Length: 115
Length: 112
Image 1 (tube, chains in turn cyan, red):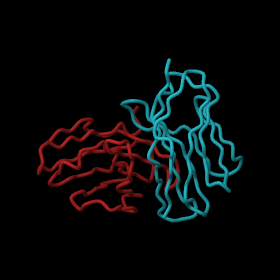
Image 2 (spheres, chains in turn blue, green; image 1 turned 120 degrees about the vertical axis):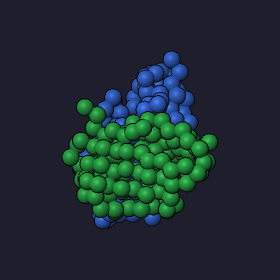
Image 3 (cartoon, rainbow over the protein chains, first blue to last red; image 1 turned 120 degrees about the horizontal axis):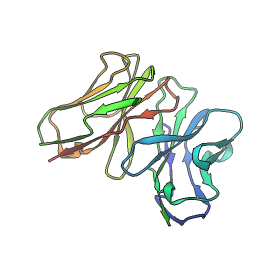
Image 4 (cartoon, rainbow over the protein chains, first blue to last red; image 1 turned 90 degrees about the vertical axis):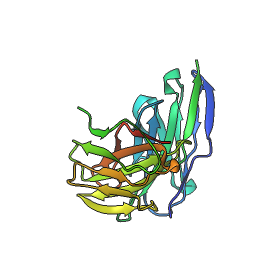
């Protein structure tokens, strides 16, 4: 069964610092990959997704993620964070070549930005 | 217009009661889901429906019963509520299985 690991539980950065949040998954077949963001007190929103093609995916608000198949990774990056990026970030994966496949979420990484 | 709307936003009730949470999406999506987010923010899928048909039923107590009267609605009924049911429940929809999810605002259920 597929699983998703986010090893950073809580990341604290100062404004303008660069960000990289790790995400690894366990499925060996074809995957769809997602990053979602949950701002305090709000619902989850899609940041970016990878289905196929260019492994470097650009999302909203200056975020990007790189799919490295050999490492089963889909790390999220942002060159310069802002205070408004304070939120919980979830990596998610879905088996693209399975029927009745579900989107499985990682345990989330809480990002705190110091102003 | 809210794409995925769920009601109520907050639900406080006592152990043993039965309660329902409603969800509606106006995106024309075929697939709808219920996710449970616990106090540690861990998000776990409970059910998914595709065109009113149950597709995924995770290891959820049978006190939880989803109902999909049409593909735009997926309601969640919970019998005999327990303290451990306290969580935020998110409804979501997607164009099809594997497509990005659109989430509702969540229902914070507190069982006392």
